[in-house]
Length: 76
Image (tube, rainbow, N blue to C red; front, side, top):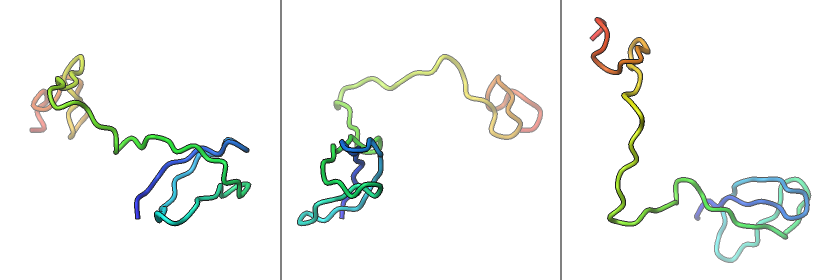
């Protein structure tokens, strides 16, 4: 069963639910079936040739939080 994210058109509640192909999901707040399926973050795809996303600098050290990044402190 796939997991889908929905937004209720009646009460604007956002939720996720496991849905079988033969089932019609309902809003857990108002039981409406007037729903909009949302794109799940984990299901988003990019094109095969897309460049990787770059950040502005190194990530903080995982041991102490040093902003110079891993190996920037004496805890390594």
